[in-house]
Length: 399
Ligand SMILES: Nc1nc2c(ncn2[C@@H]2O[C@H](COP(=O)(O)OP(=O)(O)OP(=O)(O)O)[C@@H](O)[C@H]2O)c(=O)[nH]1
Ligand SMILES: [Mg+2]
Image (spheres, helix red, strand yellow):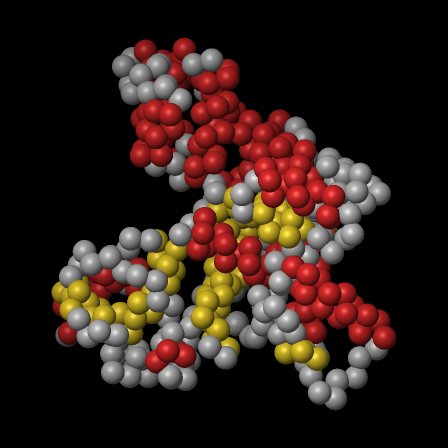
């Protein structure tokens, strides 16, 4: 699963990226810690089942602190967009190449209005975040239009030689994760199912691209820089017009994570408060900075960063968490690690899907699964639920 950070230039994408990937504990043994400069690992936060089972766990590829489990998810910081990006303005095409890979998008905006459409600093309150959202989405759509129209004559030829428009479009858009089912749905909605591509109007091509984008790249809006006082002017209108808007202050989250690393405070990403440790000597400047964060959290419930990542994973992508174990009495793997893994699976995943996610061989040799809570045997097609703890029994694991 990959989350992409998109948005206009200078809105705080890299700050959000740094804040969410700057981990408060060492996670250097992860398989994908070494990544490209703009590709990192953030975490979703859940209440761990270790509390319910009354065990002290020791996860291998995730982190559990005081019953809160943090599960890794990849995140990519995409180059900032400026109007005209689809024609190559700014770092246009680089943006779109990166964004193409993401399963869900976090659209970071400057809710305080302190940047103009090209990202240049302006007096807070004069920038227009709603217009920024519109142009970023439009750039995305126009980029899709340009992909579809590339080698347009080829498509027309294929069309006239009897190839199905759906097949042609599917091939063209395959790098975006557009499935045939998604294509069918959109073509149906727009009544384009039986219309040959060569006779589509410009408007039809644009509408098609817009709908495809909405379908394959679900978005949460990170209303960043919400610590600046001009935020209030824009937030009401924004939440009226868009779903999934969360005010956030990436810079404040970064400050908290630094304070944790320096041993100044108790705080877990996503907490609705933090506590300054006893006997901590803070300078006046540090005290002031923490006071600002504290006031922000009191007003908004959190810095917003963790909430946004969780929303992308659980609301937009509708993932569930499943805990596989090899020893159902000890809740451990072979090495004795308790509740070692937490898998993010698609909703409606089956017991056999889990086996495949763990290892291809385990999937191939799947015999049955056991629900550790109820001790019931589950067949291959059994649909898993969020927080299930599952043992897989396969021909390979019995050897
Ligand atoms: N007040 C405030 N400033 C912020 C916040 N997040 C980022 N900034 C500031 O906004 C400016 C731009 O931040 P970046 O993270 O570099 O923005 P970006 O979107 O990655 O910019 P590009 O990569 O150029 O597109 C910096 O000066 C940050 O300090 C925030 O939550 N609050
Ligand atoms: Mg940046």
